[in-house]
Length: 279
Image 1 (cartoon, rainbow, N blue to C red):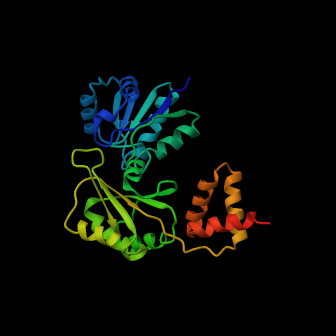
Image 2 (image 1 turned 90 degrees about the vertical axis):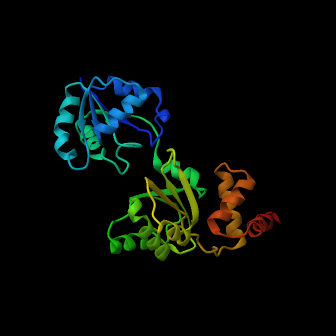
Image 3 (image 1 turned 60 degrees about the vertical axis):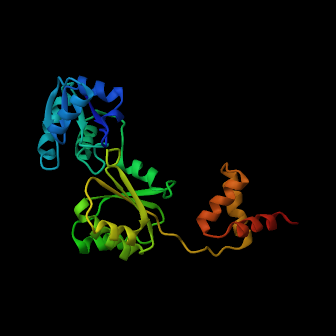
């Protein structure tokens, strides 16, 4: 009987965010594959958890070499718990290669869900959350970073990035150049920790602020591009509203959705609906 792979969501900063399931998983795991053993032992101490399983490192430089041993352990019936430094493993952290290897070996993969800097920053940013894209870390080199940002200039969804504090000012400056100096954004620093800070403003103003130096773990949230007003006839607008209603929205919600999608004022959409009802 094979074992299984468990992905454990580690706290971003506050150990109190850890629920009883992760505590139990840490205590019961046969093998704990971790990004940093020191952080694991500190977390175990904070949670008053006694680790009985074997602890092995699993980070970028060793993950490929660790795969055969971890897969073999699970094939032999052991439970492997994967924990990275913060948040969910494999989300811009080690883990994807192990997940793929376990799946290919027919091993069960499950998780103990936990905090994620992506959704936490998105939620507190004050920017639209209904649709978003996670872009991970921007390229380190300036030219590559500017090219990557230019490719996102027309992206309509809110964008979430991870960024290093010592590259943040340059990244914000490049983003202002590629996406527009007035594009709304939020820099979320040290989420859930003692010195948590959420700085909101335009990309240009945030770049000026960051030039003075920023410390800590950074998550950057940037508003998506706003499309120009759509060119639709009143009949087409009314049809768009009708389609939203057919999908389950009430009239008010349907009109609001079409307003957002087309960039048109409410009165234009509302008048189009009224016109469609006239004989």
